[in-house]
Length: 412
Image 1 (tube, rainbow, N blue to C red):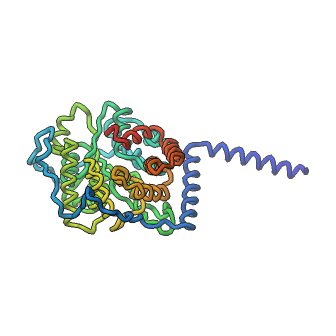
Image 2: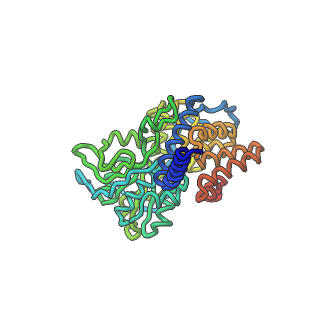
Image 3: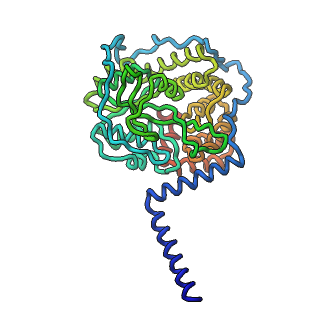
């Protein structure tokens, strides 16, 4: 071999070694792996395009099978006793309120939950970052969803000097009341993804996203938000937030010092009691289906609120209606009430079809694999079920056990 060729080989080997060492840097590895994965997903869906959410399989009504209509009579609130006395009126709110913005944190891929929680915790003096949170509640980069329960788990176990609660059925006045009392609020809403993040040419680019609200202004009818995907100190109108908040049952999250729990009870009033909060959300969502019978999100929220009360057969029918009207293709990346409803109402084929679709959209979803495994187990495919559960455990071992126990009704 000539001296020149040896020099070239040595240089090439040195370059490859340097590239390998650079690739081990976490930020570099994350960026490259994420781009490679996006190309692979897009190519896969270019060959086999993502279809719409499958509609429900035909159901043969049984004598005990409930029917569901948009005008059904809701369960009376009087049947529930709240743990505190509901507050009928609140003092007038100021026309505007704001708090100092936390240091902005641009989310890394699939990390809006940890990034948003990190910003919120900084308001309370915490000094970590989104990586610290993600390492506990979503150790794999490819895990694309963080549930409110996971965020609460992190706060209660890793920042125990704080407490966190979440409720559903929120409204604009509740958000403003909390902000006026200097409590930042996290909401789960919709965002439109960058086209570069598309699954394929038929992608609707619809995705869930956490926002941190740190101010409001009645004059402009806007909230100030910290958006880990789009930027710091942005504005969103009350009406736009209401529209983008609805697909997630108007879920809101508050963090507070335990010694101020009485103040939080006063601010939330009836909504402090989680059962009463959910019952009010159930009544409201049912009324929404009557007023907007072609709104898929109204039916989906109704189903989710029914699931909370273990009314699985009714919930399954509500989810059927939502699927018939049409849902975004990523809906089951973030919300899993339909899996519980179909499993517990013995509609196993619907469970398998829907979880299979969810796995096709989001392959790294421990929830989809968990419930797909339960569907296979019930079908008698024990080997397939075991493989599915192992996959779920690989994606997020920190929460697989609790999710499995919840599925079997052992914990709430």
